[in-house]
Image 1 (cartoon, rainbow, N blue to C red):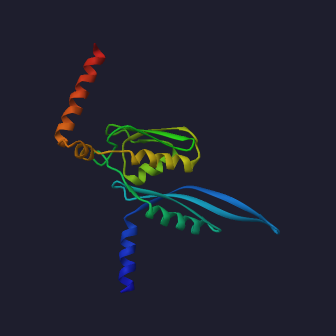
Image 2 (cartoon, rainbow, N blue to C red; image 1 turned 120 degrees about the vertical axis):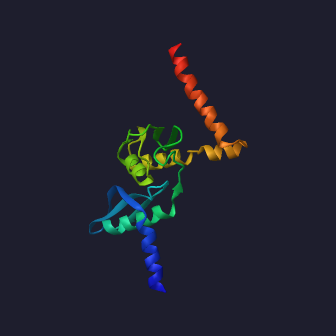
Image 3 (tube, rainbow, N blue to C red; image 1 turned 60 degrees about the horizontal axis):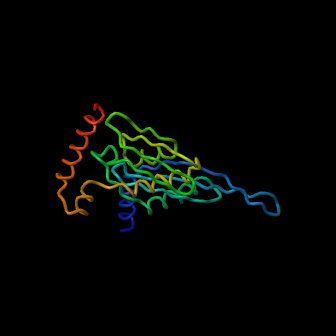
Amino acid sequence: MARQDNRDRDERDSEFVDKLVHINRVAKVVKGGRRFGFAALVVVGDQKGRVGFGHGKAREVPEAIRKATEAAKRTMIRVPLREGRTLHHDVEGRHGAGKVILRAAPAGTGIIAGGPMRAVFETLGVQDVVAKSLGSSNPYNMVRATFNALTKEDSPRSVAARRGLKVSVLQSRRRDNEDAAPAAAEA
């Protein structure tokens, strides 16, 4: 019975992709000198719209990474994606002094983002996005700001349900606005 549980857990873990974002060596000064420890920041996702991040600390690097990965799997969020490749709309997020701007992009754009944000998008499964980090370049703040922005992301289905409309009505309004924008620019 225990062997079956382990196999199920291995299959569940194998569906996730994890990326190491940052390792920090920290020192604790004690009587005999310095004791070194390691802090790891890891992002985990299934590349289908679920992503999480975790922080782990230990005396050895592999143990810190393992702890961070487990923490990331516990804190996963679901992000609605348009056509499974980009965001539905532009969004801003912030955490501390870190501020990020995420913009939906047409097919073929790729992931245009800085290091820590790139790891989040790759594990999330986004293929086309343009992102800019303003303020803090601290990886922890950048990842948390990115997650703050992703939690604000709404799908047309959830917006339609909230407003009591049909999704097709919302989509038609969007197309009307997109058609009107180029005409206004020409005038």
